[in-house]
Amino acid sequence: MNQDNFSKTGINLSTENFCLAEAKMGKIIPEELKIFLLAVNGGVPKMAYLPVDDGEFLWVKRFLSLIDSLCDTPTIENVYLRGQKKHFLPSDLISPG
Image 1 (cartoon, helix red, strand yellow):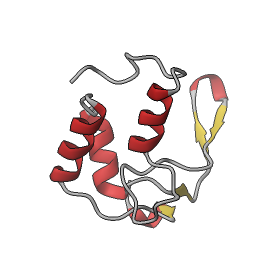
Image 2: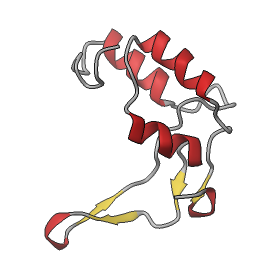
Image 3: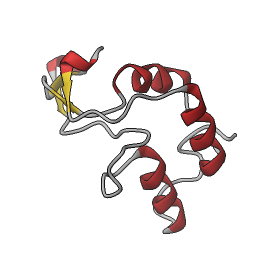
Image 4: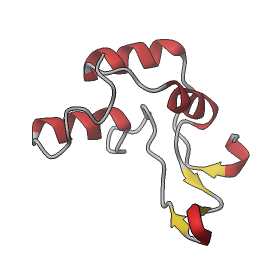
């Protein structure tokens, strides 16, 4: 995947961004997600329908960015931390840090 397949992507990331986010969340971000976010850092996919098993499709409106330059844009970090604070995300959603 590359940025040509997405619009409204987040800012370019570095490995330092992952270290900071993992420290704040107390979780390790899976390597596959890091690779994706380094390439595009979330955004709106141009092809919003992704094929899944048995000929079904999954509609994706937007992939969350790890961080974004806009303070009001939901990110993986702030959505996860809010969800944990409000107790509506399981504590094992991401591997323990």
